[in-house]
Length: 615
Image (tube, rainbow, N blue to C red; front, side, top):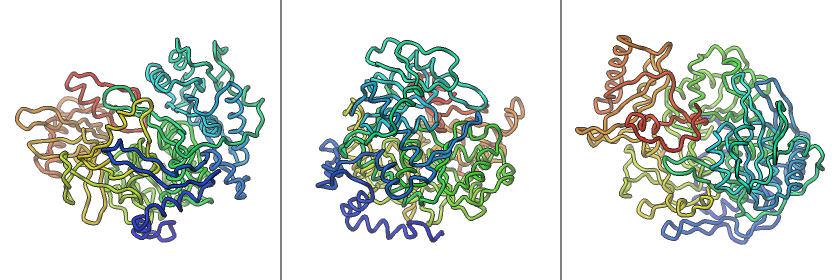
């Protein structure tokens, strides 16, 4: 337990919401600056009425204003807002006043091209200050940004540009990863070819190896000639702030829409009271602006909280396995957000790179993005938290732009469990028919009522939004399987389509994968279910082994050992029918294993949308 956290008593904070939800959210909203007050905190309709919800009705606000002027007016203008580092050696720091000037120049640049409130701007930029400034500039003038992860291929990028109906694309000509220069401009050129509604492409020229083409303008040249003053546009609390595309298992990507008001309130509340961030903290999220974590807890959250953050472009193990720890030591990082995949990568490198650097400043390490297997969590607590840092889990989605479940720094962490619901988040775990599931049993995770910081719709496809809501199941269907223990801690086991049904027994892929990871020969694992005439499904495991990929008799012996290991750990019903050894697992760029791709390959099926595939 850690006293001294903002929320030292989770139960008391949760009770304060439950006693009067309207008063709770009203107080949270009043911590921000509003141009005009709201007349009503919320208006919520149930799943049978379209699952509509509005928050802070009639209130006028601006997301960027709350990140910048609000902090400068509180005397934080000369505080460093962000320290930027790139693996190519570039480094620079910006104060809050300097960020305001840079954002204003970008905003004025956009206005010079005719971009106004409600226009969509696709941003295809790496994790750089210019990318962050561009997002803030869009919010500042009321334009709707749609950030696409820099590296997604031309077809996937084109699909997102078309769906958003973007008037402008802003990109960099290159990014840097693992010592390589990655060409981004050629991807954009192919993506916009023949799209007449895209009027301009602004290019941040980092390499500048070739002249700009038709419809292309130099980002830096345009920005430098602009005024550093640009007042924030007044937006309604329910005006869209951004569209963020998330892949489905089939069909085109879904454009999740988040708004200025409720999004700002939720992100600020949880940045301060869950992520426990003070103004004198140094925050570092190892995500990217192309994902929801990068929106909420790189671009907006840290500046809403008035703290300093570290932003780094590049791979977390390049040029060596100690680069993360060296930057923690350099900038005295106190609170850090990363993914379980990254922790497992740190495990592979061992504790030696950590021990070479002073990480005593680290106060809390948060992990989210996929189930945090107990072995990785315990390793992180032992080696990254040895100076007293809490290592805690949390769970949320692109559709719900901040945590739904989490272990607070002042709570006792339970490896394998994400934690308890955030205030405002009412959860049920139910059967596919909607019946309540007892503690200790897995079921579908459902959120009973909306929260301010969740999506409002799917851009251009309201029917797809309504599909998230089920009257029978009792609310918003997360698509995940979860289990709750007797004390209210919730473990999220994985997607509902990642749950296996073996001879009538429901087994989470994460359970089998976690069991495999406890074997000393296993580095990573992924499990899928394949049709079986007798059992319904049989379990097939894909394993990355330590050292070289095993072959021949060595592979046969290790496969047999792993099957026995899982049987001894979870019981015979969970043992894999087959173990396949692979050099690497297919992952999204945010580190999530694409199990459906493995399953489709085994079954000879179409793999669907793979635009977020890393390799």
